[in-house]
Length: 418
Image 1 (cartoon, helix red, strand yellow):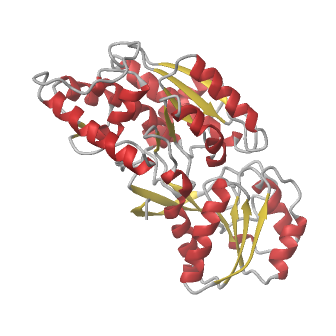
Image 2 (cartoon, helix red, strand yellow):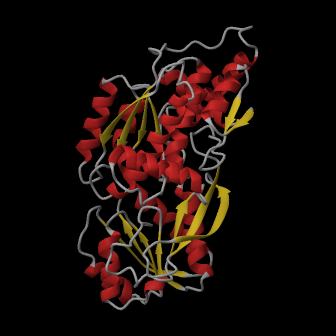
Image 3 (cartoon, helix red, strand yellow):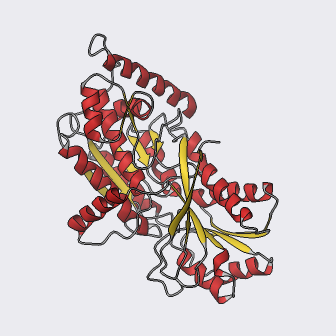
């Protein structure tokens, strides 16, 4: 069975489940493998490696969601449990595999992560093959849409089919005609580069050079030389933490700092970088829109309480929080915490039904025999048959001053699967 067919079947099961719940016990619902009554979640996040700067907001989102769920009464009347393991990055593939083995051995019902699409490629078969749900808050590689995951893989971030189109159009609409692209040679980088490249060409501009680099690369002088020599009037950077090496290399060559375009993997707080004044006027894209200020403050306060550190990055905070909420609501609706039951109810709790935005409201609705449609801080989500959020937004951010901190300028809504 293809991934499409499997998830279509699971969607049908979810619809049957919702009908059974609505009948308040008048009919027998579908039969799943029975869980142990405690929702056990695992996290495989980049505690080390090139994407480690993204783990604080992801951890903060997960922690806050679990706090809110447990304060509302927990799932199936019991507190949610969570175990966190390292994913590292593409340079250390064994780390994520070992973490997945450890969590699966501990009997987790669902795993949140990995953050990087390339890392997910290394562990998705292992996790979904064990009939354990995997949900990522930040995987954006288009090829994951059609992965043969048996219906157990979901993501709350949109495919780069959307972000690639937005950033490509942004570059051309700014009047750039000769674009250079520097991209990481991973599932993430290749997928985003392909879409952005095509959109730039379709919009009437020319990609004069597109240069790939291996994850973790530290010397970009040669690549930057090629971009400059090709006559690029702008450059799109698709990377993770390598951006901190690429930008100084561009500055050294005298490339215009306001003609740099960032993406979600590197749109960060650069207030601690010596070159922060060089990128004034540069822009970037990030899935999601404006994150609710009160929500961000609650997450930051909890992060400080738990880890004694200030939360300075907020990318994928909302997507992480919403991933946990959807897992919890799916288990509650199924009245079963097994991976099989959760997977079969993920589409149902994200589409149709009574709209809810908190676990407490969702729990009350489910106990009243209603189907729910969770709309979170990252948007409406609404999983399709392949586990992708069909409707999504991409924020356009700008480094307006020398603070090294970007501000949201616009939000572009679109379909993430076209």
